Length: 367
Image (cartoon, rainbow, N blue to C red; front, top):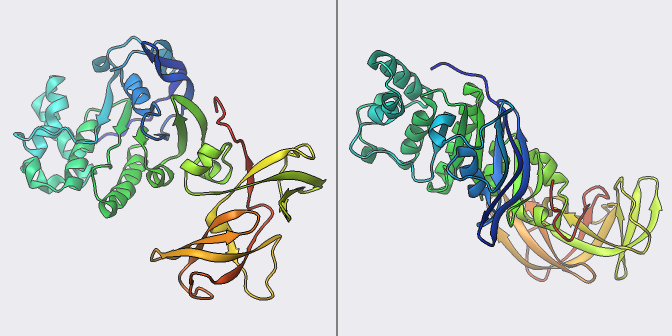
């Protein structure tokens, strides 16, 4: 199967209204050639509307869709040459695997010899050549999804659009398919635009993530940028789990500032210096909090009591009650854990001044 270079996609001020309801508002996104972009957000955030706008099934009320700089906003879906993979696979049950994959080539009236070569290459790409003569009902869910991928790629699409393609699979199979999809993206070198509400899927698959909420783009960036430096409470809370610490800004120093939460003083390493006396909100990831042994020190130390805990295989998830900061989540690796968690156990929590990052209480309107 031939590999084409990826194409660049750009959305400029895309808005979609249905009467008085605004599904998507003023979205600007630029997707680079060969990039894997994920549109991430809760149900009703506008991500599927945005994907359908890219595909051409939904016409925006305002704004433009550009492919390699050319305006394709008014171009019908069949003229865009985009491949699409749906959540429910959408395979024809009466056709064989090979016939399903060949379908886009048949409707394009490609010569049969060329069809056969392209189908073989596409099935080789997803490692399903030996199942070419089977019907979809004879395949597992993961195999059916790979057939859908082969069918979407067989005609050399300009973009591959994925609408929650792994959500119908169980957790273990979904993790396996995530690895396969990421490897497939590297092999074919095309531009992928994926929609999901699964944060782990977005983090593991994407070069870049665009987070949507209530139809607005709230932040975009690499998975590491979004996870380590969320701009808002919504982003910090939606992408992973977070503790939120609130306090009054105290003294500023060369490397950051301090905040006061009740009688607890906390050190924060940050480039920005909020005004003294102002209220600041911090996001602190549970895995960045350590349970300190006697004699251990940290930039920030807080006493607490284990309120509840769960064993998760690779680690323990603890809820620790503190006097001034409320209940804090703590993730503790289970391998060589310094002690066994128990309800009512007194503990000392510690974290670096750089571990907690300031976030906005209200969602930013745009990235």
